[in-house]
Length: 383
Image (cartoon, rainbow, N blue to C red; front, side):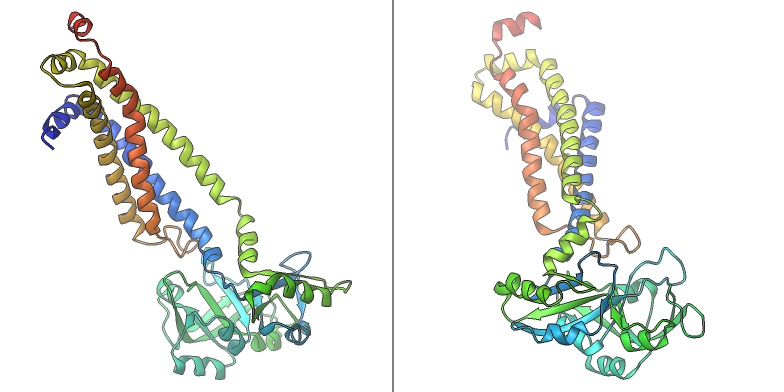
């Protein structure tokens, strides 16, 4: 600590250069925080997928419907503990930009399969009894300022019997999550109301959710279920919920690879910028370093001082960048709903600290070695 004033005075020598280098590092770690949050938001569905749940879809595409009659046959497969169906609604609330998941379900079955959706008992009973009722997650209710009893109009591509496309639901309940990562962005309503009110009466659903008694037998159970419908007009594809979520996320792209590539480019550029700053700083202080060696500073101490200066510069910029990223990210989803679970995971801070140290050492090693190997006579002659 007694050499801290010396290190600090060296950083203050060229204040403009130090400031711009500091800002460059700050921006790099601000980007790091945001990109980690984005990656985490895309990956969170995979992380929280139920280990005891399977998802059954049409073999060709998830958008193709499945016969309603499949449910009873699925329930009879050994190892299946429970089964429910769900159907994507695809409606619009007030404005096309108001995107959220609207799903027609069998209320009791669906909530049995998703016990992490917590809803007060009185609200649950009210929803079960209300054919035009719906429930939504707390995130959704907060976003649109909905409250219990509100009438919520949704325009959907499904024609009603009266020829209209406007569907109205009564909000009977608002569910919360058992954990902070539980999805609270869904809008759930009665499949029976959807089936009976639409113009086209075909007994189909979008997909099935299946709970199994033994998660370690998931591949064998999935194979048995698909075998039931092999060579039928509507063949199926059954996978674990985690695999299903991974496949769904990959339709957007390999987010992890994209973010890794961006961060690699950013940190390589910062490495060049910060490294150049340290090299210039050492070249400008050759005479002073020679004097330090003359008065008895050992080579190891000279090396340590230059490395400490580099690490301190990276540390200040990185800490400010991570702090600013955390502050901005804590304000929530900046996309208006596309990334509802938008947080910096705890491990990202530890990873950021590692990157700060690596950046400091990487940018300071070459100039530190140059300073350590400096020959006093040649340095003083150049000075």
